[in-house]
Image (cartoon, rainbow, N blue to C red; front, side, top):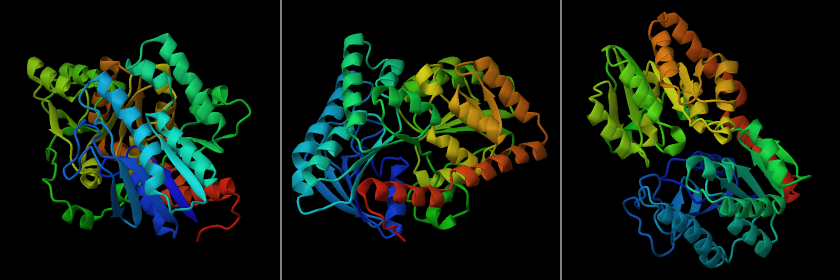
Length: 415
């Protein structure tokens, strides 16, 4: 089966679609990816890439076609809009030429923000007479309103109409959270919506030293003693990292407890300023490291922290790091509401506290820090088992192949 994946974000940007594309290719599928020039999350092009011109690469058995786009910049709403729109325009203009000799059985959209990236996929579906499957990772326009990027009710209404158009003209809709189903169906009445969760790469659950030996970068480390709380991932408005600052300040008297925030994003500079301003020696910002270094780091942590803002849209969201944290087998502290917190609680993999509540977060850290090591190990073990049962990559990839085959009207199953 030949598949075209349309995703504005792809390797070396750190998104789950990277490993999914690799896994599909490993199953014998012919996989192409249409994407942009990597610039997330810092807003600058990665080394070796430029904004102009098209590019073709071969990565882990996947053929990657890159179109030009405007880098998102740092905390610039105008640049972010240009980033979104330039990918749509470039994909529609250059995509047909780049893919001119290619025929596909299915088109698959990894629909993080911007959801509008599905528009080129629908265009290719029309040109190549191929059915389109959209995997909804982020609810638009709700997330734009929640993060404050778009405040105009008129613009939000217009975006809702465009998203409704995308949903209605998509052949199959998958959602990463059960809580997404109602919002998606409201914009596409009568359309079938299927729950399909994020899976986790095997490197998060198994020791793979060979991965680390191939990484040409300094390896992050954690203190050998004390209780270390690790946050890994994007540092933006949605993550409400103010709660980490607040909790660190409340626990500054506990010299045995430290917070370590790995990653970059639009709120990193603010976070660094607050650490200096408040003299928080217990809050460390090592920066971003290759994703291959994260599994080992997570297994070294005393606890793993996930945060989201206190907004209805984020209560429906399950951050993909929840699955990675569970697979790593360490206790989780979930400073968020709704579906993500429910999963952590259901798995008995850690503690869940209300979003944006630094007092509750500090209390949860203290509870875990004073817990017997055997109890913490049990929490980690339960999370790992839950991950194997519900988020196993192998099983979910096989299920995705079935969905794509059915959507394409192809009864043959890839081996």
